[in-house]
Image (cartoon, rainbow, N blue to C red):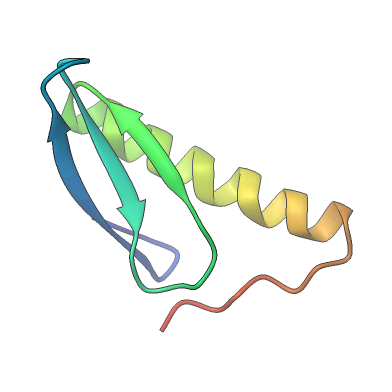
Length: 66
């Protein structure tokens, strides 16, 4: 899964019957959840956008994806 250069890997959480995703090409922690492909894509984009907005609000330079 890819959004704005950030790549994510997915794992299935059998206890919650959903997937958890993590951005893997950055030192920043970006995590998201979803039960369908559409939900995962939407939540990944929302998590990246929220992370970037939070960095901007606090004057932090986000780690660039590699």
